Image 1 (cartoon, rainbow, N blue to C red):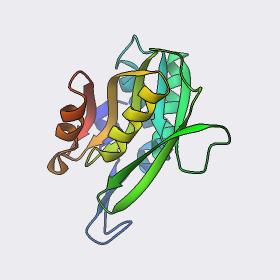
Image 2: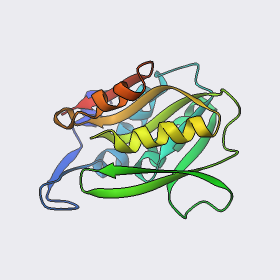
Image 3: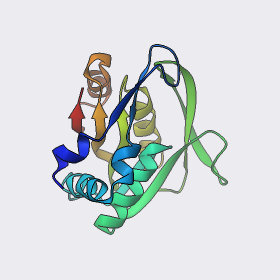
Image 4: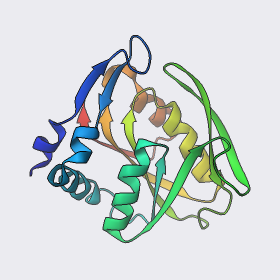
Length: 175
Protein backbone atom coordinates (compact mmCIF):
# COMPACT_ATOMS: atom_id res chain seq x y z
CA UNK A 1 0.00 0.00 0.00
CA UNK A 2 1.18 3.50 -0.81
CA UNK A 3 1.38 6.17 1.91
CA UNK A 4 -1.36 8.26 0.27
CA UNK A 5 -3.76 5.30 0.46
CA UNK A 6 -2.87 4.78 4.12
CA UNK A 7 -3.44 8.43 4.98
CA UNK A 8 -6.84 8.34 3.27
CA UNK A 9 -8.00 5.94 6.02
CA UNK A 10 -7.83 8.69 8.68
CA UNK A 11 -11.32 9.83 9.73
CA UNK A 12 -12.34 13.25 11.03
CA UNK A 13 -14.65 13.12 14.08
CA UNK A 14 -16.37 16.41 14.95
CA UNK A 15 -16.76 17.64 18.55
CA UNK A 16 -14.36 15.14 20.14
CA UNK A 17 -13.07 15.30 22.84
CA UNK A 18 -14.76 18.70 23.22
CA UNK A 19 -17.23 20.74 21.20
CA UNK A 20 -15.47 22.60 18.41
CA UNK A 21 -12.57 20.13 18.10
CA UNK A 22 -12.27 18.12 14.86
CA UNK A 23 -10.49 14.98 16.09
CA UNK A 24 -8.42 13.03 13.58
CA UNK A 25 -9.06 9.32 14.17
CA UNK A 26 -6.01 7.33 13.09
CA UNK A 27 -7.31 3.96 14.31
CA UNK A 28 -8.53 2.86 10.84
CA UNK A 29 -4.98 3.40 9.55
CA UNK A 30 -3.42 1.59 12.52
CA UNK A 31 -5.79 -1.38 12.27
CA UNK A 32 -4.86 -1.99 8.63
CA UNK A 33 -1.48 -3.78 8.63
CA UNK A 34 -0.57 -2.68 5.10
CA UNK A 35 -1.39 0.94 5.92
CA UNK A 36 0.52 0.85 9.21
CA UNK A 37 3.57 -0.63 7.45
CA UNK A 38 3.39 2.11 4.80
CA UNK A 39 3.27 4.74 7.53
CA UNK A 40 6.26 3.33 9.42
CA UNK A 41 8.24 2.95 6.18
CA UNK A 42 7.61 6.64 5.42
CA UNK A 43 8.60 7.74 8.93
CA UNK A 44 11.66 5.50 8.66
CA UNK A 45 13.03 7.81 5.96
CA UNK A 46 12.99 10.82 8.30
CA UNK A 47 16.25 11.79 10.06
CA UNK A 48 18.37 8.69 9.40
CA UNK A 49 21.10 9.93 11.79
CA UNK A 50 18.82 9.98 14.85
CA UNK A 51 20.09 7.86 17.73
CA UNK A 52 16.78 7.69 19.61
CA UNK A 53 13.09 8.12 18.97
CA UNK A 54 11.23 10.10 21.61
CA UNK A 55 7.44 10.00 21.44
CA UNK A 56 4.68 11.83 23.26
CA UNK A 57 1.87 10.06 25.11
CA UNK A 58 -0.41 8.52 23.99
CA UNK A 59 -0.91 8.08 20.25
CA UNK A 60 2.67 9.17 19.62
CA UNK A 61 3.79 6.02 21.48
CA UNK A 62 2.20 3.80 18.86
CA UNK A 63 4.13 5.47 16.06
CA UNK A 64 7.35 6.03 18.00
CA UNK A 65 7.73 2.50 19.34
CA UNK A 66 7.04 0.95 15.93
CA UNK A 67 9.49 3.36 14.29
CA UNK A 68 12.25 2.74 16.86
CA UNK A 69 11.83 -1.00 16.34
CA UNK A 70 11.87 -0.56 12.54
CA UNK A 71 15.08 1.49 12.75
CA UNK A 72 16.69 -0.59 15.55
CA UNK A 73 17.25 2.45 17.76
CA UNK A 74 16.10 3.30 21.28
CA UNK A 75 12.63 4.48 22.25
CA UNK A 76 12.03 7.04 25.02
CA UNK A 77 8.53 7.92 26.24
CA UNK A 78 7.43 11.42 27.23
CA UNK A 79 4.49 10.90 29.57
CA UNK A 80 1.84 12.88 31.35
CA UNK A 81 2.61 13.91 34.93
CA UNK A 82 2.76 11.14 37.51
CA UNK A 83 3.15 8.21 35.09
CA UNK A 84 6.93 7.67 35.28
CA UNK A 85 8.36 5.87 38.34
CA UNK A 86 11.79 7.48 38.74
CA UNK A 87 13.17 11.02 38.93
CA UNK A 88 11.80 13.17 36.12
CA UNK A 89 12.00 16.57 34.52
CA UNK A 90 8.60 18.28 34.14
CA UNK A 91 7.28 20.88 31.71
CA UNK A 92 3.83 22.45 31.61
CA UNK A 93 2.08 23.38 28.37
CA UNK A 94 -1.23 24.59 26.95
CA UNK A 95 -3.53 22.70 24.61
CA UNK A 96 -6.26 24.08 22.40
CA UNK A 97 -8.67 22.92 25.17
CA UNK A 98 -6.72 23.20 28.47
CA UNK A 99 -3.38 22.85 30.25
CA UNK A 100 -1.27 19.80 31.11
CA UNK A 101 2.22 18.69 32.15
CA UNK A 102 4.69 16.28 30.56
CA UNK A 103 7.61 14.38 32.09
CA UNK A 104 10.70 12.51 30.96
CA UNK A 105 13.08 10.43 33.06
CA UNK A 106 16.15 12.46 33.99
CA UNK A 107 18.43 9.67 32.74
CA UNK A 108 16.47 8.90 29.55
CA UNK A 109 19.07 10.23 27.10
CA UNK A 110 22.81 10.46 26.83
CA UNK A 111 24.51 13.84 26.55
CA UNK A 112 23.94 15.40 23.09
CA UNK A 113 22.23 12.31 21.66
CA UNK A 114 20.44 13.16 18.43
CA UNK A 115 16.69 12.69 18.82
CA UNK A 116 13.82 12.25 16.38
CA UNK A 117 10.69 13.50 18.18
CA UNK A 118 7.44 11.83 17.09
CA UNK A 119 3.82 12.74 17.72
CA UNK A 120 0.57 12.02 15.97
CA UNK A 121 -0.69 15.60 15.52
CA UNK A 122 0.91 19.03 15.37
CA UNK A 123 -1.80 21.50 16.37
CA UNK A 124 -0.82 24.57 18.42
CA UNK A 125 2.74 23.33 19.07
CA UNK A 126 2.47 23.48 22.86
CA UNK A 127 2.93 19.76 23.46
CA UNK A 128 5.87 19.49 21.09
CA UNK A 129 7.58 22.60 22.50
CA UNK A 130 7.24 21.14 26.00
CA UNK A 131 8.70 17.82 24.81
CA UNK A 132 11.64 19.60 23.15
CA UNK A 133 12.43 21.37 26.44
CA UNK A 134 12.29 18.05 28.30
CA UNK A 135 14.58 16.35 25.80
CA UNK A 136 17.10 19.17 26.19
CA UNK A 137 16.90 18.95 30.01
CA UNK A 138 17.60 15.22 29.74
CA UNK A 139 20.69 15.91 27.60
CA UNK A 140 19.36 15.22 24.12
CA UNK A 141 19.15 17.39 21.03
CA UNK A 142 16.08 17.30 18.80
CA UNK A 143 17.12 17.38 15.17
CA UNK A 144 13.73 16.61 13.67
CA UNK A 145 10.09 16.62 14.72
CA UNK A 146 7.94 14.24 12.69
CA UNK A 147 4.16 14.15 12.90
CA UNK A 148 1.50 12.16 11.14
CA UNK A 149 -0.91 15.11 10.84
CA UNK A 150 -0.31 18.87 10.89
CA UNK A 151 -3.30 21.17 11.38
CA UNK A 152 -2.04 24.23 9.52
CA UNK A 153 -4.65 26.74 10.72
CA UNK A 154 -3.51 26.39 14.35
CA UNK A 155 0.02 27.68 13.65
CA UNK A 156 1.97 25.09 15.62
CA UNK A 157 4.88 24.95 13.18
CA UNK A 158 5.46 28.68 13.53
CA UNK A 159 5.38 28.47 17.36
CA UNK A 160 7.89 25.61 17.38
CA UNK A 161 10.26 27.33 14.95
CA UNK A 162 10.02 30.62 16.89
CA UNK A 163 11.60 28.83 19.86
CA UNK A 164 13.68 26.25 17.98
CA UNK A 165 14.71 27.64 14.60
CA UNK A 166 17.21 24.86 13.80
CA UNK A 167 14.73 21.99 14.11
CA UNK A 168 13.40 20.32 10.98
CA UNK A 169 9.64 19.62 11.02
CA UNK A 170 8.21 16.85 8.83
CA UNK A 171 4.49 16.17 8.52
CA UNK A 172 3.02 13.37 6.44
CA UNK A 173 -0.44 14.94 6.11
CA UNK A 174 -1.28 18.65 6.29
CA UNK A 175 -4.89 19.67 6.78
